[in-house]
Length: 411
Image (tube, rainbow, N blue to C red; front, side, top):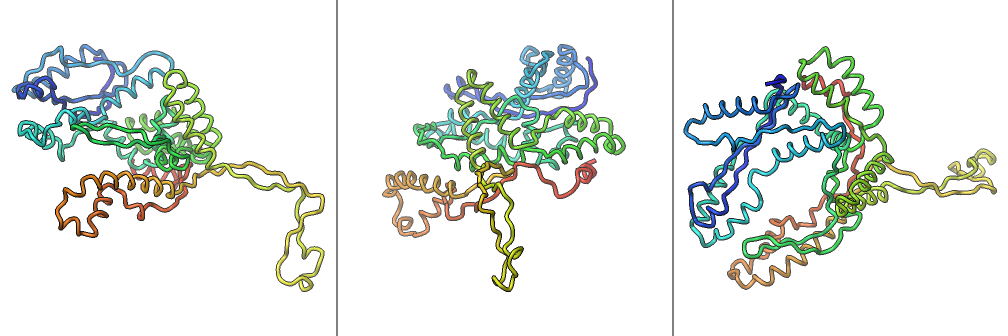
């Protein structure tokens, strides 16, 4: 079949046949299927591998019928010498790791309040998924879970170092309303720069790797890893870090975001604009100015005895000193929870309007419960008094121990 098997990743998805659902039927209603990614050390013979996997599935599931033509197996890579190879791999991973049930499936079940049939279908779907293990990894990918869990702080740094795509950025405030069983959205306004940083802070925290840490990682891979781990893990970790082009400074980060904006201007102008908004918010947040003097100050005590001027040694600049404003950049973001509080206050105003419309439908006991309104707030996450305090968000990855110590714990 080709290369040797290294590992696999499987995920389960459940969809409904809309035609059968609309007809109130049962036969052929459910399509429970599995996405499988196989990792090998060399190219596989696709047709031969598909036959082997299909025959194995058939032998384990004799009570089920599946046409061989319905068993889809294809290459998840390309031989093109450009970024398209990574795009193909990422598309395969995204397809395999997405939702267990499409959001549109839940919208199809829009009559559960009046239809016993739809309630039973909803219960069947829900119970089949509740507490079920929907994603499973094998081989070297199973081993990698402990590595990725231990190096969770590296997530953004690793993603930015090897990705040709930038995650979606939240830049707009949108209100969702449920009408006729479906959700409809209404654009409210653009988020402010502070709000953009607050709601996208997970995308950019720990996104940079310092030269010192990069050097530690490379040194460990070259000298220690080969002695302390299996060939499979060694290959995985070695290739993982050796191929990463870590972003190592704030200026590099801004330049990388600029390149994403430039590449998306024609293909996806909306996303390009969203990334540009986040990029500008980052630069504005980390940039500050200081007064830089042309002459060094001297201490007053250098020319006058301390007992003559009292306590302290005051700094004095020469008369010809010129002060120039100089722009500098921090390597962390100062994220203010105040933007979150203001956003939630807006949500409360909107919620109050909806609440007033249905207030008369509540019984007198609930109406007289002083805590009832605030309980509803908390269910919607609207208790703005408990908003997180202001915090500094690190752009650089930070560890409390050496890279070697972290590797040793998982090998």
